[in-house]
Each structure stands twice: as structure tokens, then as C-alpha cells.
Image 1 (cartoon, rainbow, N blue to C red):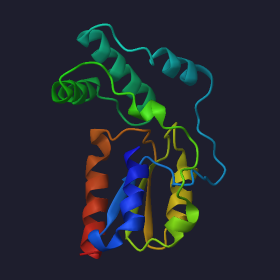
Image 2: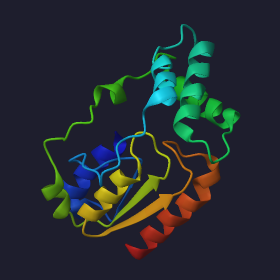
Image 3: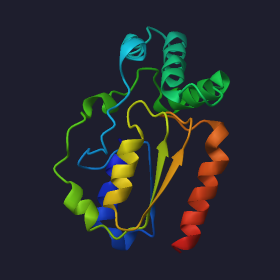
Image 4: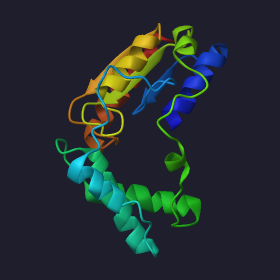
Length: 183
């Protein structure tokens, strides 16, 4: 959801931004280059089963880690402890183990803004796309980058809908390079 929200200041307030980096997202018009989300079969069944929040903090943390495992992809190493720490920090910050439902409320429908707005954007944009993202397969990132006049696309093979430590250096280096090119 942050990737969609991040497109709005890039479109409406380019004078306030030097650049923007968008990850794991589609364009405001939710268009793609033809690849549908890879949510089907057993993976879809597992994700649906993981939609029910845990009854207590421990079961909720276990559910969240299992959800990350499903979104992570099967290529890059999955570090369960890394994701557990991430979720423990999220629970501590929120002051509750009850999950947020904001992402669930966002449908895969085009927003009132769209492709024409993005084509007029002047904000230099880095689009980071996971090669195994089950929610936004590569076609979504390609579509977004193609709409933006000053976009660079970074596709990371093996990355799902998560930012595991295995790709932190690759993404950080790309962001630093992007920022250096647009001071």
C-alpha cells in the first residue's frame, strides 16, 4: 500500500521530492504487462488459512512469520528469526498484537488517479520489483516503470513480497546510486 501512496507525492508534489523509491507495488492504474498475480492453488490456500489472527501474542507472531514465509518466495534463504524480530518490533510499536487490516481493505482496483498522472510525473523514481512477488509479479513493476518518464527498474530474481536481509545490500546500493544521480 505504501508504494501506491508514494506515487501520489511524486505526481502531485514533485517540487518537494528529489526522488522516490517504490518497492513491491503496482501503478496507480493497477495495470500490468499481462502477468496475473501468482496466487493460486496450494499457496493461495495457505495464505487464506493464515488470514485468521492469532488468539494471543505468541500465536499471532507465529502466524505472521508463517505469512512472511509464504510471501518470501522459495529461492532466497528464509531467516525465521529475522522475521520474528521484525514482527516483535511491530507488536511493541503498535502496543497490541492485533493485526492491522489496512492492506486487506485495499482492493486491486484502479485508483481515481492513473496512468496519465504517472506519465506527467517528473520525480526520478527507482522501482524495485521482486521476481517471485506473488501479489505484484514482475509485470506490475515493468508497467509502473514504463509509465514514469524518469524511472529505473531494478528486478531482483528470487525475491518475493518481502525485503529479506539477503537483498538489503543490493537494494541499499541501488537506492544510494539513485540518490547520487538525483541530488
